[in-house]
Amino acid sequence: MNYLDRNEFNFEPSQKVLDAVKNFDAKDLCFYTRIYDQGKKSVISVRVSEIYGVPEEQVLLAYGGEEILKNAIHYFLSINSQKDATEPNTKILIPEFSWWYYNRVASECGGTFEMYPLYEQEDTFAYNVDEVIEYTNRIHPRMLLLASPNNPTGNSLTSEEIGRIMENIPSDTMVLVDEAYASFITSDVDYIAPLVNKYSNLIISRTLSKFYGLPGLRTGFGFIGKGHDQFLSYSNKYLGFNRFAEAVALAALDSDEHYRRVAEDMEWDRQLFKKELGNVPGFKVYKSVANFILIKYPTAIKEKLQKALAAQDYKIKFMTDKGLEDCLRITLGRREQIQTVVDTIKQCLA
Image 1 (cartoon, rainbow, N blue to C red):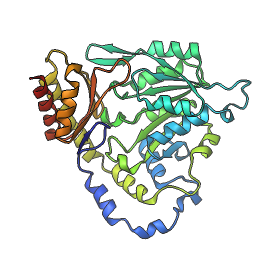
Image 2: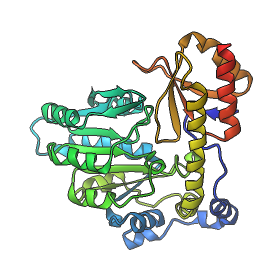
Image 3: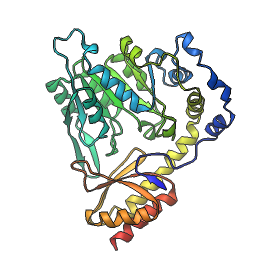
């Protein structure tokens, strides 16, 4: 089966990752890690601290970026994180046209969510930063969620825009920036430490699932501003982390060159969609800075296209989100996979 529906990785892992898997000593699984005795969470958090220049104690580790998201929302919307409040604030602001899971996590812990708009602008979507600031000040939520790049629309925020939002909203609103796809935009990470050092109410979440192509490893990492010892205690693992995952994660973090080449190869996919479908009536190929692309299509071919793809063992995402029902989200894969998808779409138009 060719899975192009959940933004997974259809390329080869780096040689360092393959070697880490091959050379892992299974006897290491017989013992807990000992780095926790040194006051460190994991060898991963130590390495991430070195790469990103953020103190290890402010590095978050989790079972994928998903767990960072869930831990943060469950904790900061809870009564325990707002002991001085006469009435707990359980409101969270979530971008429109974003990952459905954000809403569900908020609902799990009794949170109430409101959506702020994203705007379609020619062949892209965009945040209106001034409006995000206005919404946040007017509603004054306990949490504001930003996704950069956003799934499924593929648009992002600059570090300057994130800084402007942080500077102009209430300091007791926790801001979580979901950067699961951020490494596809740039290799520059120098903006993260200054933002985290300046704003105590900021969380930035990343993962090894997308750029590093290891969704099955379930390893996420992130960063939080100072002064959240209780949250760190809530989210940390007392007996450390999966030692096999640690070994593979370290190898992946040391393989940027390999994964950067893969990310660059994905530009061929984007250009093929634009070339073959961009000028076809009923289609719009949106710009994307992630490992997927959003395409508006004529829904009259939906059933025919679903059957044609299934016959070839291909899966893509037929969007059902309100306002995006006439869109496809397609994971950027190997050239032959993307060529097959494009050819199948065109055949269904014939």
